Image (cartoon, rainbow, N blue to C red):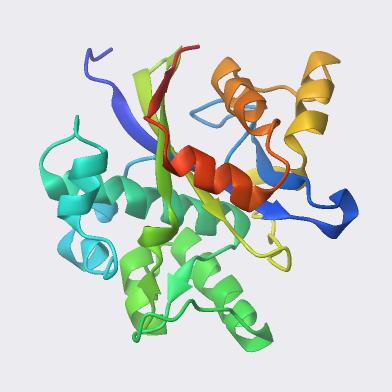
Length: 245
């Protein structure tokens, strides 16, 4: 094992849901039993940093959020481009596992995928899984930039020891419209669903929703907010929290 933790990133997607009134919901994903990190556990979309997240073509996808801003918020990671790559990794994993892509048009407007776009994204994700393209190339082909500015870095979790060593996970929060729906990825995530933090915590207590202590702590933090935007604005003003298993 190595003493240097492996860097990873996870994205907590939060939204309003008509079925829950104004109470926010978060997206949880359950992993395969042979997953390298938190197998058979429910977790937020994400995973380890990949070398493709650090290359210039990937970093160039962040046009509204700079490497300097990333290292200012994530001050314990250097160099600056490496800090920014964690924002890239969070968005990449989220797309790979859920089909949700937070992106912007070239003029900065937030991109909302239509039916044609969604069909193309399904094809592009399959091509990534088959090794025929990678995330930066896909984004450049789509002529879209990543909406890295929407992600708020709010927690640093030291995840449980694995066969490959410790995992240092950076948690980000982003609010999405209630119309956003996930497309399950049978290649990676087994199951995914939107749930209120309160319900997730109750099910975890009953033993029907397995998760790590770090995931449960984040849900505990979010359960007190009456709205998604309320949670976002409050957490934006708070210092980054360190979470231990």
